[in-house]
Length: 591
Image (cartoon, rainbow, N blue to C red; front, top):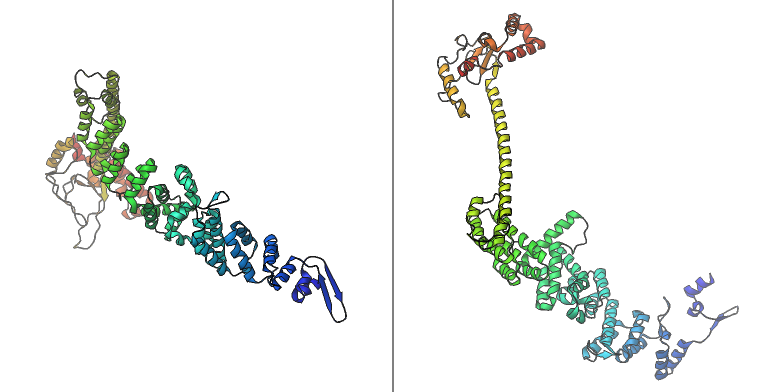
């Protein structure tokens, strides 16, 4: 409680460390403490003995350290400013130590910032000056001190520029993430990318080392491109202005946009969307992407030329031709329609017969096969490759006849034997397929014939006088038939059918009436029968017992049979057996 009271309203010395003597009386309390260097400094300043005070602080800087929170500063702010100003001019290493020890609240930050800026602008301390055997040591100390004070003064943007200039990558990245300052680096993209790369590395480092050193900066630029904070055109323009030395970083940036590797998203759907967005951005730099991918990543070049339509074909051909990238050049030429030139490159430059054959098959152009044969006739290994790999794509007789007489071809016999075997296999497969197809066609025709022979049961109901249910279309003079083999049979059927009048029963020649009560059976050929007439004319097509049972069924009471499910089933079964042979008239004509 005593300590709490002292800290809240007592003398500051009461809570300070060290030996203390308290003298109490009924009316007062006196505290006595041992004198220290801070008291000595105050005495020197009170007596205007500044030289001794300076020496005292120089040897004991802890005298002017930040006091406890809630206490008044031990010395006026001007003292700290004077001390810092002296070290800005004379000893930057000591300045760095003091700024790490002193709280910025002890002095006027603006005054010290002005002193630092003036010193840097004077040109006395630069990146190239040497102090203590180290190039640019004091310049880096002053810049980092300025950055620290900028942050204390609420100016993180200026602090970021300082950290970027001194290439303090950790501090710069931390500042960017804490204050969301990525948009502020848009004015100095090259400097931001170089934050972890020294001049020596720019001259001597490999591409992999440069990629590793710049990966964090490139990733931030790509992520901000997705968010619309840093335009890719701004990045490309600034890096291109820096010349060829910054070309690798432009490649890293374009590749990250194209592949979507700049994003930290782990969701597949989100990553796919980001990849699409990144590729759309790269589409705006088609020719530049071709140049960069051709120089640094050939596999990515082929992927790009196949996926993109935004680049100039002539420029892309020139780039690939200069680097002798024949597969990429062949693909671009095929897209422009110059397939003959592409085929010549495959044969002349690559000498790859398999690629040439696959290219000709892919184009599916007969003239291209002729060109392939023309180009290959003076190349024995190409001829052998054609014999072995062309298969059935071209006529083997044409290929063999075009081989020049007297041309020695190693393995010619094996090549011809292999080609013949290939054709035998192909013929065997084709023959098997033909047999299967013939079998399927025969089965389908049988199904068609069976369907045509089926009868259709229908009833004529008594309705209104002006309503007619049954109307038999006249038979066509020339019935359409799919099979040519049935043409003669069809003609005979038509001739026999001419004797039958439309709307009459074929069996009894009785015309159908509106009050017809007996079941009618019609066939696809156009013939219609009374059921009883059909049974009489079926003869051998149905058994006599079936006919008798069906006649007996008709003899029963019509109302009872119309309501009995069992009777209906038996009725349908007997009808099916009776007409299984189809139309009797057509069957007789066919025989």
